[in-house]
Length: 532
Image (cartoon, rainbow, N blue to C red; front, top):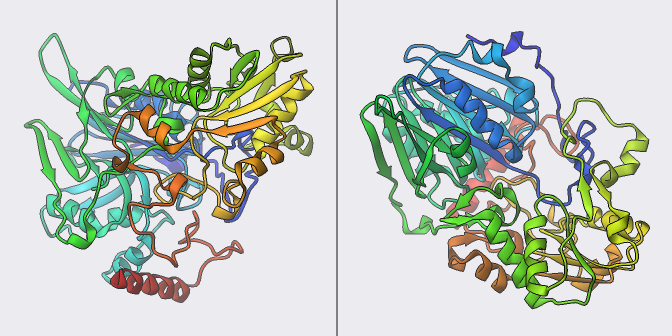
């Protein structure tokens, strides 16, 4: 069994509550977008090197989280789990993967949204269930985790991490005297928020998605042409199916629990028992704008093509006379191509991205901090000098990076800089698995479009309207979570819950929260939910 304690990759990188400068992340200052969430992967494939396929699967999902990663494998008797801090390629090598043997595996990439960024919070999680030892990987965020934690502790559960994900595991453990299916349905009943899960027992791979379907999860099939044996893969995005050698079958439905084993597929659908908790489909619309990889497909649509349509709609909505269109790489590029095509203005690469910028455990010095965005992006003077430039970006969150980019383009000789954003103003924080700033730190929270333009120094600024975003995505508006733009949260957010990564570990001063304080807050949350 791979023992994480013996791993050379045992490096801690802890972000304290309230921190805005994680010293080891060179790319942090270059990001003016919501940070990623997590990626999950699972495979059932007898006779296949499942650990290797899982490695490639979570490697394809690396964009969804870069803080830690892990793989769990079972051979039917033994469950091996290896987790560490860092990128997938920093954690796993041939020697490590060669120690995994089995037919089922789950994998995880983590970007912390609740629970600090340290090894104890890396996934997959090991737990006990009605079917014995299990492993669990979670993408999303549990909004009633504080109340659940207190309730579960009163029932005898002991928590070892500061993750909301562990509350899901403990619900399964508390119900291990019942059939596993009932324990999973209990998760559906009790947990509020976003959860796309991959889990495994000694003989079964399980995929599970919350009743709102906030985070994506899809199913693929592996077929061996030699013997006709079939295997299955589940993943956050279709790009991971491709690298694992699987063909897309369908999306896991909101509220669905899918069991995969030697007998095939068995699907169980959760039915809401109370009209007070009726769920509507609420896929995060930001998956289309920024989060998902451009080669992934979601709801039958290619992400790259959808982003191009956003750019086209933006050009028709907010035209401007200019000489060149550039995108902020990488996620702004498809929309920039669409803008150029619809406007007739030539598209060129005007900003070059350093693709080797990544999370590191070496702290930058002050000079590097001051360089900020220049560590990641370099302007092409021969493209920009003397030109009227349209810059297409997918979103503005805090406003820090766009201001630096505008300044950089002017220093490179741009005569005019016109910002075009392929999404509406980002005004509200996300509580469903994306790491965003507090609302007061969001630049659109209390500033008009004109005030934001003045702040970043552009000659003009325009955002894509909500109506045109919905047209570009081509799906009904009420099937998405759009809360970051319009404040309409599809799942109730307890008003007095501390929505920080350290809700279970620290208060705002970086000190451990007293148990009585946590219990009092959780009790208030319970009372709030009763009123609701």
